[in-house]
Amino acid sequence: MSEISRPSAGQLAAGIAVVALALVWPLVSDWLVAELGVRALASVLLVVSGLSLFAVRSAVPREFALRRSDSAALVGLIAAAAISGERAFLLLVPAWLQLAVFRIFRRSVREGNSVFERVAFAMEPNAPEFIRPYCRTSTLIWSWLFLANAFAIGALALFAPLAVWRAFTGWIVWAVIAVASACDYLVRKLHFRAYSANPLDHLLARFFPPENTEVGRRSIAYRRDRRLSLGLPP
Image (cartoon, rainbow, N blue to C red; front, side, top):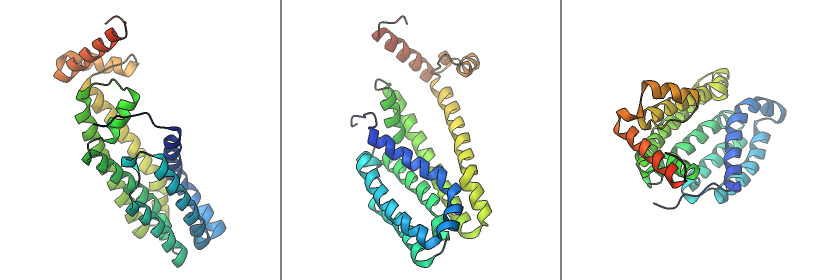
């Protein structure tokens, strides 16, 4: 397993740029099309996307970088919009983004250093090794969620009224991700039973004591050993 380091400033900036694109594009695309037209907007996006793809590729770790086929797909969508003047190609950009994230997540699981493993060990370099299988499984489940989002957005872009696409990409998809995040948090807490001092964890600890499961007991032992190593009372 390769060493997992904290993200650099460039990696963080690239990640923020991708999130900003996902959040802002459905909200501003109508205004931009009205102001510039499809062909002009697509021409601008060709230049911007080319520069952005180069910056992101040089900033993120190799295993998290977009493959050439992913980059080519984005450029192809925007070029098709510029040539044809068809807005549907631009509506497929959020689907491309979800599909690209799916491929990154799935590839990270296949190559043995999943996204959530990297995040967990970047946040806590001394995290216990027994969390790795859960991180890989969670990464895989999230990858399928992103794939489902990609298919849904693509179908809406091609076959549904624009208002439906706008609602789904503007807030529904993020509501789904928020619900999935909450479920992931709850499942993770109930699996590891590693509770902190916040009120929700106190409530979960009352109904789901860590002493009742093997993984919970391992979490208790890890926290005790970690505190002793820092010179704190167990």
